[in-house]
Image (cartoon, rainbow, N blue to C red; front, side):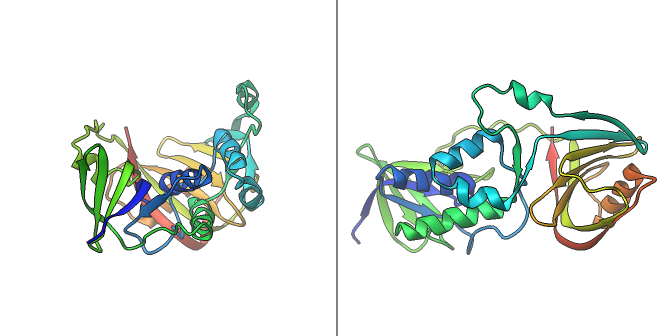
Length: 264
C-alpha cells in the first residue's frame, strides 16, 4: 500500500484541531485531520469565546461570520438570598492590547460547524468516523496508521483528541491529574422565569447552592449548578436553581443538553 505524504496530521476535530488544520491550510500546508465523530458538535460543551479568541478569528477571516451569531457580554453580577449584591465590568478595561473587551456568548457547535465547512471548501475535509491505530517515527518523520488501513507520512502530528488522548498515551507523555473535588451540573435550554433576563453573567449564592446563569445565543440560556454529589438528576439541579434564585422561580420549557463536570 502506498503511503500518502502531507505536512501535518491532526488527531481530533474539536475547536483546537479544526483551527490548527484551518490555519495550516491558510499557511499553505497540506493537512489530514481525523476524528471518531460523524460530524461537528450539535449541542453542549463550551459556551463562550474569550477576547483573545475573537482576535484570532479576525486574523483567520472567521470573525464576520461568527460574531453576529452570539451575544456580547462584559458584565457579571452577584445575588445572594434574593438580594442584589454587586456588579462588575471594569476589569475588562485593564486588559492591555485587546480589541474586543468582552466575551462572545456562542456555543461551541457554531465554531466547529464553520471550521468544518471551511476545511471542506479547501478540499481538506475532516476524515470522520476514523480513528488512529498507530503512530511511528521513521527517519525523523511521523507515519500514522488510521482505521481504514491507510498510512499517512507527515512532518508533524498534533494531538487534539481530548483528555483521553491517543496521541499523548501512545507517546507516554505524562499528564498530571488533579482529582476533582467540586461537581457541577450544566443545563442548556429555553426558560420561563419571573427574574428579568439581562445580557450578563449572574451568580446566585445561597447557603445550599451556587448557581451561574449564562446568557447564550438566540433564546438559549445555560445554568451551572454546584452539586453535593456526582449522583444527581436534572430535577435535583433545577431544584437547586430555584432554591438559589428564591423568591424568584424558574422552569425549563425545553432542554437541549444536560451534563456534569468536575473541577479541583
